[in-house]
Length: 233
Image (cartoon, rainbow, N blue to C red; front, side, top):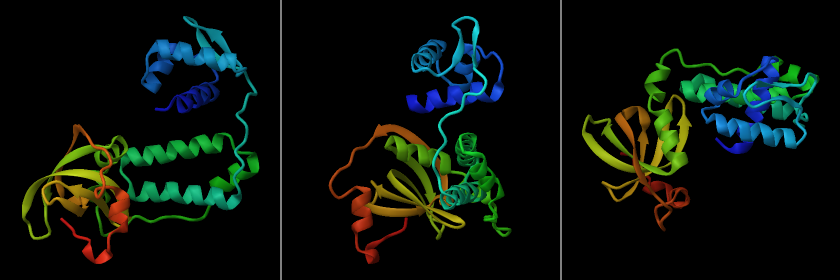
């Protein structure tokens, strides 16, 4: 978690709970050390955020403090709500929680009129009644993490022809073609770009081996290749 995000989360946690919160509680919630909380709160206080209390006793945010409102238009708010609902409909639990958390943070600092617009959006996203969502996104979290951390993944892949192979992949990006999630990757077994439907992975493990951009193996190279050369599996 970026430090700026953690400082925001500390303020939001104190604002929501409206009571004395110990550093240990904050540390457990944000998954950092108590020492880190002490340092972060001291920095917030130095920046004139009205956090009252001290180390060893606990902290409380002075009543009436709000972060500056975000200046979104109604169209922008509706786009954000739509995106979150799309994630909720077709993402996994981790993705859904992240989308809900992001919306909660945005709503918390919106002016009342825009906050009501976010709640009242009538754009919905329906999950398919003919597909099991979990079957299509079960491998989503580890793959997203591997893309962020730029780590290779080791997968057991079952092709549409029922052939099973073990692959080591450089995960480059995900695309959603409901209900399928497609992974663009550099496949070390084939020595070429390959795309995979992630529900065809029987197992996925994120390795400790990081990768860097190499000429001819980047996501930009994948996007730039002639479409007719695209290969699956």
